[in-house]
Length: 398
Image 1 (tube, helix red, strand yellow):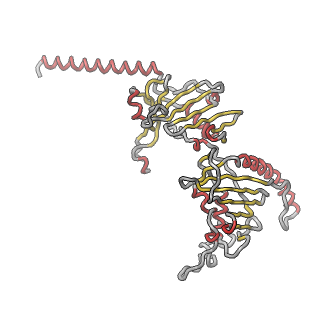
Image 2: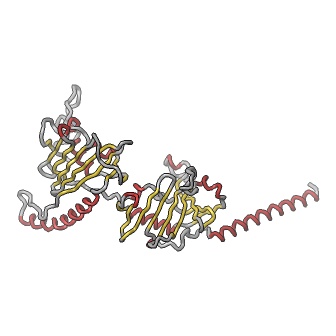
Image 3: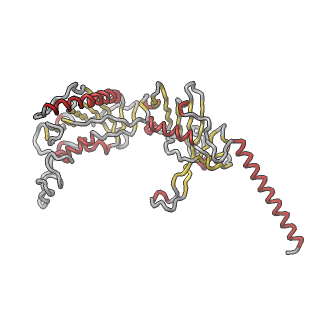
């Protein structure tokens, strides 16, 4: 390389370096003007208590959470109570969200990061819009959440961690932050499905005394004399399968819904009635029907009765036991009355429930009977007579 070539190369390096430096200062100036500074809070002036309405919208769903009189509800579900824990978690994350990365991305490239604004006619590449309003209806925040940012974690053995684990999320805040930023949390609970935000507190039918399923000739009814007695058929021939009885009763105490319907009715040719009577003088009358499409069921219930005001002593109780348990029952009664009042309110809605949760209760009578033994079957499990599962004695809790 001669002297002339060397000087020309130095000039080229200087030109390129100057251009790079100019681009750097241009980007830095843009970050400063937009407020998108690394480590800064996305919403520095946000106070969780100021938000009385939260609206979430994507290309398919929309949900509005409203606070009134200190209680949150879901507008699109007829004012059904909202999950306060989920709302509190979301607001806490919004208050603390910090910028960990800032990118200068043209608006035409927003769809690649799922940052397109929903409701603008396009469905591909749209994000989830989140709007917050105060009690006067004034907007206090407007954000669009896009793709989740992944971070490589070579030490994570889980199959779904091959591409990385959620570490943040792309976001834009129209009018406040012009650059696309990545925030310090993946915001997994930013979801526009109404069912996500419903309070999941549901009725809890426990201490069941009788359980009746079906109507007419298809009906079966099981009963027990004491809370820990063996289940038996209330009428009719056949030996009750204890596993089936316990499964049906346990299913009733573990119900959970996925959504609430404001328009559907529990009706149709395949309607099933379930009646559960408890030792607390409460009766749950439940109607169940298959949805017109899909595997889920529509479900509603009516609670009637009142818990007894005083406790009835059990046979052979000693005087000191009667007195002690009567005092304990005072607290139990308060809890029962509060729970039953809440559950009576829940009875005004129709619920969407996964089929697998109801299947143990929707068996026909033939499925509730101990099946005849086939030649070559074993003679029952250890410690149990023929016809009972291994280790299961009649009346033994499963």
